[in-house]
Amino acid sequence: MSTRTRSAKGADNRQDALSHTPVIVARGRQDRPNLPSADFCPFCPGGLEAPEPYDVRWFKNRWPPLPDERCEIVLFSPEHSQSLGSLSRRQLGLVVSLWAERTEALGTRPDVDYVLVFENRGRDVGATIPHPHGQIYSFGYVPPVPLAELRGPSCAICNELSGKGAPGTSHSCRVVASEKGWQAWTVWAPAYPYELLVAPEQHVGDLGEARPTYDGLVEVLKMALTALDELFSEPMPYMLWCHQRPTDGGDWPTAHLHFHIAPTRRDKGVARYVASGELGSGIMFNPVDPEDAACRLKGHVH
Figure: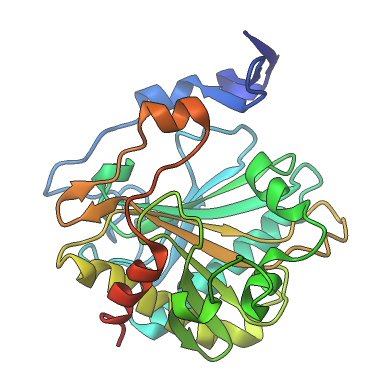
């Protein structure tokens, strides 16, 4: 039961008739390679996707889920054993700058209304290559999740930071890291244990507008990701994505740049699975109190 339109390169844009959820059937992705052998990485310098030395690098995804060169890969470092959180401050700053540059370049296209920067870290969340990297998708419309955030009567991030957001709890008790005008805090109603938001204290709409504050973003992002890795003394699998102002030319006054970090462990070696009762009801059940999560993470911030 769906409505459907055909797009280029064998992808179908569909919408489920019951839930109205948009789905893209990207047939070409089924043939993409799985994990490469231990002695071959296409993202290391000299590899297939990085033939020359580099600091940070982007290139077009060979197996894109969207047509018309809308999908890109971003390499965070030439060092295979690094992670986004373990990068030096200089290197992480280069990554943030590249995210902004690609957002601006893709956002100038007349067929791009929204640029989504994201990372899947770890096999548990589907990363097929362990080399530190992320992706960028460029949509011809504003996707449902950021659109729902943008449709509020006021800026939810500003409300949260000013104490006008979540009822019955103090924002300050959920702050994990704060530095140079940026904060990371546990989400008041999280779908995932230890779920975090990272945002600037000032209302800025996108990565380009936030350039003067990159030092704060780098510090807080590094502290948050390091704390997640140290929490269970093992690399934390997570999903990270950046929500920012759409590139369709609209005003979008409630757009406040922020990062979501959704870790997929609820304890050491124990995955947080989304169960049928949650998918079937649309209601998430989280066993970890966000205030307790903040206290535990703060103990690993340095």
